Image (cartoon, rainbow, N blue to C red):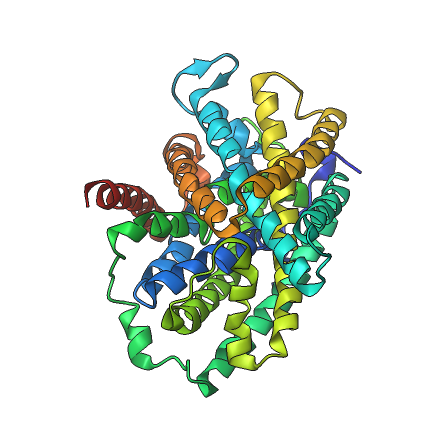
Length: 455
């Protein structure tokens, strides 16, 4: 299999034309959606809805829609330059410590703390499996080990294709199930009224005691900083950068046409995945607000999954519990796969920036991915065993994502205004969307921190 991280003239492919041919080249965004849905949507968004009700629906939708421009700016950078996210961070202006610069080290420290978040996800998988098939006193431990082992088995191969196919199928099935649940809710005592939906667009924020939850939810729903960084690796492994070809010193019309064509495919990929995860996010939030908030039930601890199942049993009937548990296993495991696949690449690339490995060497990269695909699930499992509160772990991880988002925002500004070739500059409408993303993320960090620490 050719090394996707090396661009040679032999790998050049003309961008597709027509909807059908373009659709065949989509995929990276759906891997991204898989990593988003299980943690941000199923857990964090639902808990947020259960705690605050409908008033923050605007924040949930805004969170999903506003950050995609930064994702596209990162994708554009990778397609024309062939460079990874970590290479981009390493080239940002600022001091260096050892062989890597401040941005890589800042990401490394912050992302290492986010082991808590994925520990919560692997705990969610174990809880769902235990609810489906209880193995006794040590059921959660046994199922955690099983989930970790299966994740290791799939990801250690370091191949993109199976991850993409699994992600698309699983997200599609669970989304359909959730849509049916929300529609069925209208024939129950928990039916959602027009006034309740309208109350979600009053641009209110929750009480200061819940600002940390709001911050974590804003950071983790839609594309977070870690998903933006991971997206570039999926673009490369799908072939977008290789198909464009090496960037010449003088940009020829042929190269520019290919770059613009593959950037256009990437933009469609990002837009469709945004529609997917925004829909799922809104569905989970509304279910949490309508069913759990009205009963003053907040999913916590080892009861997380069984409490979440009430959203489906209260709308569809008792039979839906098993269906939800199967769906929860599927979507959380899908998130686990996508997260581990991304983490192994990001950390391997960071190790390359530190000078520990040569990330561009396929043998060294695959070896690092294989080793990390064993180490991370073990760490996540241990953290879950020690803490045992999946919802709390996911939300704390979401709050840490805000730090990474701020680094990503700075990188996006440099990419757009310092590195981007004149011929590939986007429209004014895109620039407006990009600055809306930037201002929103910075403002969210400032307002949330101020309200949390001052109130």
